[in-house]
Image 1 (tube, protein in one colour):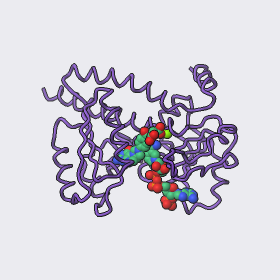
Image 2: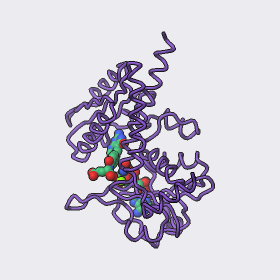
Image 3: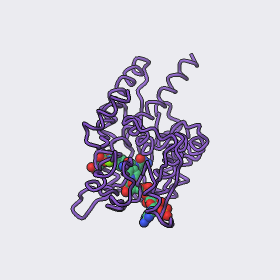
Image 4: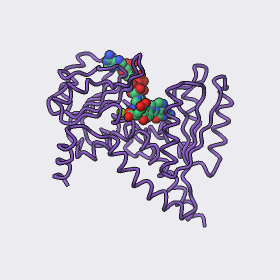
Length: 299
Ligand SMILES: NC(=O)C1=CN([C@@H]2O[C@H](COP(=O)(O)OP(=O)(O)OC[C@H]3O[C@@H](n4cnc5c(N)ncnc54)[C@H](OP(=O)(O)O)[C@@H]3O)[C@@H](O)[C@H]2O)C=CC1
Ligand SMILES: Nc1nc(=O)c2c([nH]1)NC[C@@H]1CN(c3ccc(C(=O)N[C@@H](CCC(=O)O)C(=O)O)cc3)C=[N+]21
Ligand SMILES: [Mg+2]
């Protein structure tokens, strides 16, 4: 096994190919969906999008396409920008009580007048496919994870695919958001890494990043990490998605320079992004599997 992974890395020239890992899981998921189908269960994902944010619309379209390709039923619910908090909560209640719906996702960001945390709290934790509900956050931090945020989960799968075991390694995460930085820290800690979380008030950030065996960058600033900021031989995970004036996408890492010094680096696009969607689909299927099990038990 170890030899296989080393060959794989050399062939790929030190790029962690998120699309390749995504394909691997997609093939597996198709088989899982087929097996559920023979039990008359179609995994179903409901995505609520409020307002007209262009980036959100693109993500939601991508999710829909990927879901349908795997055989997951995908329901997109569009609500106008001026939707009230109450109307949104009532829509979530409907999905919570719909036995055919496995996963519920409310696309972020939400309009200013809506209290996002209150909305996320309303989702049934067992259908909370994003893993943002406090119950799922607590499960993750107590090393008893059930449904977890897709972006860091996808990163863990990529590390495993490339033979990187976090145990005993120094992991540094730059960024402390609830959707990336914090759950990433919990997952790496659960995998026995020694974890440091850095943010905008961190002092001597470069000194920390230079000590990282695994560096995860989720800041949202193009080329935030340069070759001199990393340790030779590090594994560098670029979560950033930045668009310039010409709509060209770039990450938070100076990829061309960093790949000369690092062991493994994720590209943008083609790294973390494709795995985020893949893990969203995987967790929808996992919830549907639990539904299938309950159906059998209640017969
Ligand atoms: N590929 C994918 O699947 C996904 C990609 N993304 C992308 O990842 C990036 C991060 O997303 P998200 O976590 O939601 O972003 P947030 O804006 O919520 O968080 C950014 C974090 O970076 C920290 N930060 C900002 N500036 C600095 C600095 N100069 N030095 C150190 N830390 C700094 C902030 O610190 P503080 O807390 O102190 O403000 C904050 O914790 C974005 O580009 C986003 O588009 C996000 C989700 C999924
Ligand atoms: N409730 C909620 N859950 C989320 O998981 C969530 C969210 N809200 N809001 C926005 C962020 C961002 N996010 C991405 C998903 C896929 C790609 C993706 O597919 N990226 C591709 C290509 C992107 C492109 O070309 O535009 C890539 O990196 O190769 C990126 C980012 C999920 N998010
Ligand atoms: Mg990417």
